[in-house]
Image (tube, rainbow, N blue to C red):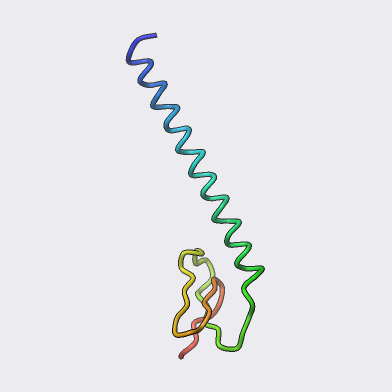
Length: 75
């Protein structure tokens, strides 16, 4: 095996490891989205984000809970 072949093998291994890490992060994100959807209680003073927003977009704004799928309401 030449040095170039070895370098390409290492690059392919690094790319595969990165792909695995990305897939693991995506799975963790999906699990968090599911957990948030199941365990965030609904309340009267709740504002919501448009459907399709990611968990990282969840905010607490002026004491109101915000969750993906909710409508934005005036405060």
